[in-house]
Image (cartoon, rainbow, N blue to C red; front, side):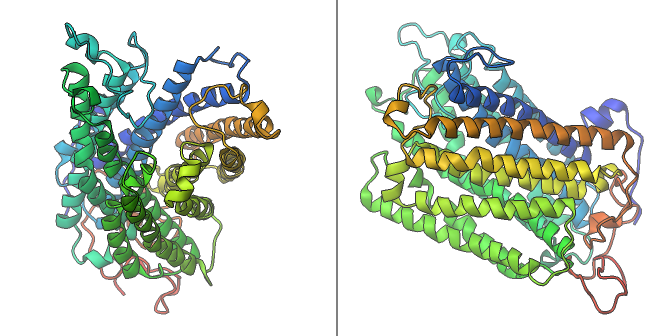
Length: 563
């Protein structure tokens, strides 16, 4: 069956497009722009931490309120406006139709709307920097009462209440969640209904499984936080008291509603990255993915467990100690399926013909760094240990060792792996390897010292520690400065990536259709794929990881090849 093509105007092709590839690139570009903003905010407050008495280059002075506002916006941006679009929306749009052998998403118009809702949410968030009250400074978790103080009790001005940083960030989050729900519905329906002939569920690439697992986990958990966001908006602009203790509400209720989503959100981001890593290590080990069915089953167990461990973020919020024990045990249990998945990946590497191509370097870096984040998460899952280090820099180091590899190592592994396919160009390998090593080394220089600062008592959300330094160990100042200098170099090293990206798009060497000799369907069409992805719908005959087949002269066997 031939796939129809038709001419479109510039606006229809590139702006208000219903083509999943264009929408994927829109998410990618928007996510990278937001990453630049989030990185700049991080540079400002990290510099202030290391050198509190100095003027910050390219900014000026930073007061306590602005410091907290920058930390709040940095956290929210990186999780919801960088990781979500890059790992879930962009990858899902680019990969699902091409890897299951179809022309587009099941609902192309809904797909377009999902991006524009996301774009609107980003605009609303950035608008919060320019309202008179300034950006919200109560933490990216939006805990009441800090986030519920905009209502004027006597004669409420609803417009004034809306045009505050706190209200705008809550509204932006609500819009972003709606966007991801629309996109997620598309991913699930497309995967279930539009697979190529012969592509059974157990012949799908693992990354397609994992993107859909992320969607399922998101849908299971997002309801309470959407409800909480709108309840919080009503508290701010209409004077309700859902989270106001003085009016019979309960601020801790919002913590439960937030973390019921907030902890599964980690796995919503983790699943796509794990899928990318699986594709990369199988391709560059020239081996079948070890334990394909086990990985799927372990992931389903993890999804169930992910929605019953949320309160390990609330051990000091006054919850019943017996419940704290329950959530501690649940946190330890959820590490088991993910440990099994990581062991499956290591088993895939074992004995393989490993090729240290650029995507493989990012995949191995992901495994190395994420293991540190996972192991320290076990400590924080213990209520006795967590009470000691709660809200210290130890927690900051832990979630950076968790979320940084998920977001950036997972994304860059995907970027360098699929860039030749979706652009038709090759990147500069030397620049790409320099980018990897700078990122890997200086991330360690930034995040690892913070573990020790936290264990020695350094608290979060304090903009100037100089008053406390005399009470703490002598190495505190030098560790903060070392971490900050490493963070600045880490941020600057991303300009290597940007330069390589722009240079490669403009004058990079033309890519082969299948430069990595991979088996999955997206590599069996042209680079870049045409409108509709395939000139003719493919038919699938085998699983996606058939490497080293003795019936073939070469060590790979595409899913659609007849032998």
